[in-house]
Amino acid sequence: MGNVFVLDHPLIQHKLTYIRDKNTGTKEFRELVDEVSMLMAFEITRNLPLQEATTETPVTEATTQVLAGKKIGLIPILRAGLGMVDGMLNLLPAAKVGHVGLYRDPETLTPHEYYIKLPSDISERELIVLDPMLATGGSANDAIHSLKKRGAGNIRLMCLVAAPEGVEVIKQDHPDVDIYLGAMDDKLDEKGYIVPGLGDAGDRLFGTK
Ligand code: URA
Image 1 (tube, helix red, strand yellow):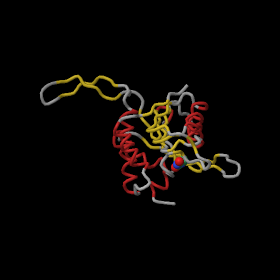
Image 2 (tube, rainbow, N blue to C red):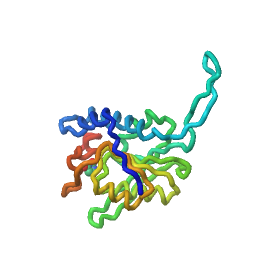
Image 3 (cartoon, rainbow, N blue to C red):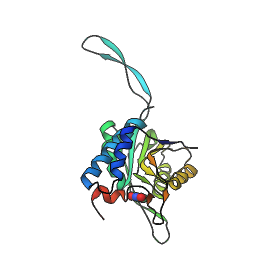
Image 4 (tube, protein in one colour):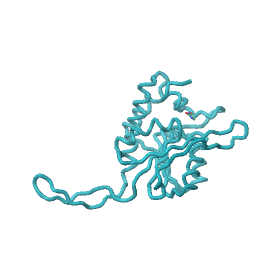
């Protein structure tokens, strides 16, 4: 079964408080999401494998360490996932970025993938799917299915805030996917918003309503 990690670093928790605040405007909201994403990138990469290297310092030759293992791919789910990309790239500048766009038919609730563009070598990359809000879990679930269908084998999911309902969906359908959260909230309301949540992440990031 996939693991769920709530990243309880004090800076992440402090900044999340201001992200949640309804009085935080678009500019500050975007900056805070950027910063929290960077801090979460720091935590999520804690266990990346290293390999030995040799480096000439101005003084002598040193045995040092560099990242080894699979390269990283970031997969933001359109549109709110875009807000997490730059913060992640600050720490992972060599990562490639793929995009998945999904919407649900409001009548049938069938997911429709309206856009997908991925790095050609996703099967060789460690993928981190980015979606600020894990609410019903529908979009993240479908995006992960899409990635697996195209050969991805190593996938993690990173969200700012989750509802227990969404986490359960991913754990059931994708037990191989570890989930990294800034916070686990209480529940979904009748409109599918996370409670207490932070409202509509896409609208708050892009200033739309
Ligand atoms: N998507 C959002 O942006 N916010 C929620 O609370 C739920 C889904």
